[in-house]
Amino acid sequence: MLSDTIAAISTAVGESGIAVIRVSGPEAIDGVGRLFRSRLPLTEAESHTVHYGFIIRPKTEDKLEEVLVSVFRAPRSFTTEDVVEISTHGGIISVKRVMDLLLELPDIRLAEPGEFTKRAFLNGRIDLSQAEAVIDLIRSKSDRAFSVALKQVDGELSRKIHQLRYTLVETLAHIEVNIDYPEHDVESMTTAFIKAKCDEVTQGIEGLLRTAEQGKVLREGITTAIVGRPNVGKSSLLNALARENKAIVTDIPGTTRDVIEEYVTINNIPLKLLDTAGIRETMDIVEQIGVERSRAAVLEADLILLVLNGAEPLHEDELQLMEQLQGRSVLVLLNKIDLPQQLDRARVLNYFPENAVVELSAKQLEGLDHLEDAISRLFFGGELESGDLTYVSNVRHIALLKKARQSLADAYEAADAGIPIDIMQIDIRLAWEQLGEVIGDSAPDALIDQIFSQFCLGK
Ligand code: GDP
Ligand code: ZN
Image 1: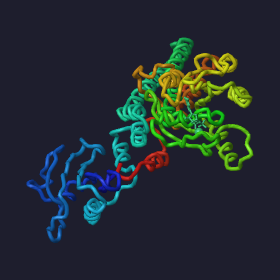
Image 2: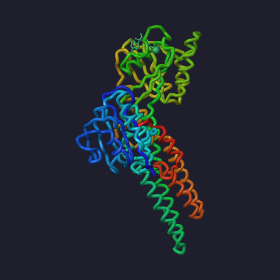
Image 3: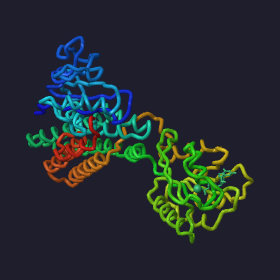
């Protein structure tokens, strides 16, 4: 049992308006109560109430800090245990003084990273996919990624997994009946039933897997390489998108010698923009390094923005580049439309479809909305706002879903091949277990420890 009481600073370390110390476990209320002076003793406080008072040194009764203390009694708390939260003035000294006093109490120890969430999981208040979503919440880089994680904390993915598992249990029960009463001779009917159920669950799994690619994009952002010859306007574009001047813009070809990164959000899609040095052969050593890095950036990019200067004819390098980029996710940006145009658009259309070509002016900030639309279309089929936020984005979940899909495919094949039903039963049970691992049913202890160790302290 989790009989000990844990405490940690739950807000970020450093200067802030307030800081919160969280205490959870059987000694939480008594323990904090020994250090807290208020109108009412803390031990008499009702659940979900906030109390104004002072933290004192128990030996001398000196007032140490003015605080607000919130009480959440078991089981109606984040961990399902008694939880006390102490809000102190921000600043390292103030929080640390209170923390030190707490840790001097006999039954309270410092929490490990993620231990509060782990207790919520072990006490059955949230499942594993929800706990992992808490990590995602803390780390999310965009509004949308945040909403997705929040939905998962709320148990949206868990509910879908539960539904699929329920169907599998039903199927197993059906098989069980058939095995127990073979004289009913329902074998052929059962085979058809099993195949139908395997199909149903497989489709459910595939639906979840389809969201995985989008989930990854929302979580990590689309890694986007901006490429093109020197002076076509790559840095200007990066700046226009970031709406601040992080990259240096100049008239000298080859100024962008290194890869510059910038996070932006376009129509709610997070992009990690990489401005690369012009891709071309050069004798300049420093620039050569930049070119090497930009090649690497292009290789790992999810999206490539190829910038061309509309005010000049196409260059031999650019024809080569368009050739090399075949088969990748590319948007061609015809930049500098504010100048007289000299570029032969038809030649570009030999390489890329019409809807992959966007005309804009990075300098005049024209046409950026078309670029934004094109990116939305490319990654979300333009349906980003459809509202269903159940995205599978966690690699562990994706791997398990794929395994479960395979187990069901095995069961289905066995059914087709006329293999005895108890063999199919094994595959279906396996699929049921694999889905269970997503939500932490049948997850091994080592895995659980590893997942919770990713949390920051105090969560
Ligand atoms: P990079 O070498 O590809 O990064 O190009 P820069 O962004 O440094 O731009 C090179 C030059 O082109 C600068 O003088 C920019 O002001 C200019 N430039 C960039 N975009 C446009 C545009 O849309 N219109 C015009 N007229 N000039 C631009
Ligand atoms: Zn540049």
